[in-house]
Length: 245
Length: 99
Image (cartoon, rainbow over all chains, first blue to last red; front, side, top):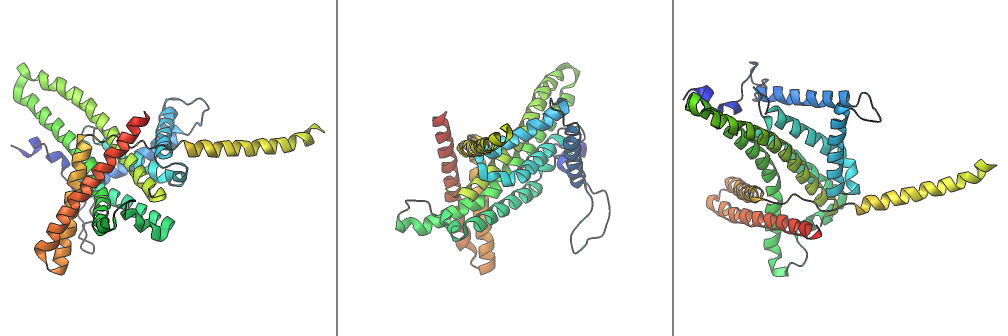
């Protein structure tokens, strides 16, 4: 099997520059960084161009911007409540970045940044550390009461503290694996089914094409859904940090 | 003449609006965590096991007691994962009942 037909080839990192390592770190510009940059530029263009007119009756582009805003605002209000308004800019940034990166991957010749666990785990750990710091600043010593559920018998307390601690530590891991696994699985499946088209030839090749059309639509749905789930879980963790039970 | 009479009532109205806004915003918060499906639950379980194993392995590497903490933290990780799944299902049950 040649390299281009390998369904995992699309996730490969390719470097565009050849710099020597700086402090033992490879800081070369690669396709992942390129698509992150493209996503950030797309978001900036989308939001600034969309809100340029500030029309009372929104046009198409402004309508899309407003829908995105309303969706995230509703999510933050439902899951965090009134105290979550301070963190709205961060939540909105996370949602737009994950959504745009996911959708960039659906473009032909696109690269899915969020299919790499290195990227999603970096985002999840920033969220995890930030949420923990917010909880410690807001509640001080009471934060550590979070690891002991109400109504635990005293003889179970030492065990429960460790179980809750590990449940807490598993959060960023499950957050990052969920996004990366969903994006990677979908894109690998698309490539495998696209490979069937050439394998089956003219006679039967149209069957996988029909399937591919359906799956491409489904992948776009998954891209939006996973961005939504990532953001909702961020809101849920933030709510736990602010309200502690 | 009439402006002077209107001013205090406007202030009162503004305060009333503020109060109403605050109460409506506070009461609107509801738990609407996503309903955990099969994928959600399985990834929770996976994350617990991976997290526990990592913590245990590196504790052992640091302290030089290789099998001990790896095994203990592996099982604690599973217990933590089950705890996360329980919380998720409880949340979705609560949300489903309200519906």
